[in-house]
Length: 301
Ligand code: ADP
Ligand code: MG
Image (cartoon, rainbow, N blue to C red):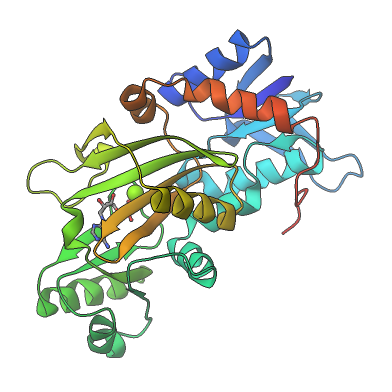
């Protein structure tokens, strides 16, 4: 296969590993900075150009689109889809997963376990919003945050009120969520490829930190997940329409709850914790699924 990897930086661990794994399995691979791809969208032969070159002949594309370039990145990916190139994850699925509120609504529709979550626009409704999600302590999140930035734990009703009002004053979209205290500052990352959880790890926040993000100093260890956790993670990825996903679960008193579904999960933490060749499994997934060819949406939506 001829594979394109959409990534802003070829030196990133995940990008390097995907390049290595593709080459090791005999494929031709190119890393393309998504912000340097430009497109002719009016033509009856959709095309993508890269630094003056007309890109042709790709069989598959692996999007590694950072949160800050979601808008442009998914447009480029959509163009690849229109050209008949098989995407590891579809552009629509990536767009869905980048909006925490939209994701949670889709998951709720399928009856997947979630922390009690609320959303409001007007400062006048903040008091009732807090009560609706069972009061303080509660977690407040920016809808489009990543790496733990924009996630705040408010210990008291008063603190929650002022934080929510401050965010609203900045016109930031936020959600308020039940704090799953019993998770003890840990979450479980399930790495999904196709219909399998290929590896799972527990991430523990550093001392005194409720956020377990590795970017916030959390540490990762291998973990055995329960059958219920496995099926919850798989259903979540399927609901989002993602072939490859990092589904983050919290162990709550009322069973596993899905916190978020990541469409470009990092490989470094999971490969280190599990000792598995996750990059190789991703390429293997492309080998099995690209020949069938068509994407579900082909650039629609
Ligand atoms: P981000 O997209 O920034 O990673 P998350 O929603 O994943 O945002 O939250 C970051 C971290 O905060 C999680 O990994 C988890 O450890 C902690 N966290 C988030 N929501 C809750 C919650 N409702 N209860 C307990 N801990 C939470
Ligand atoms: Mg997270």
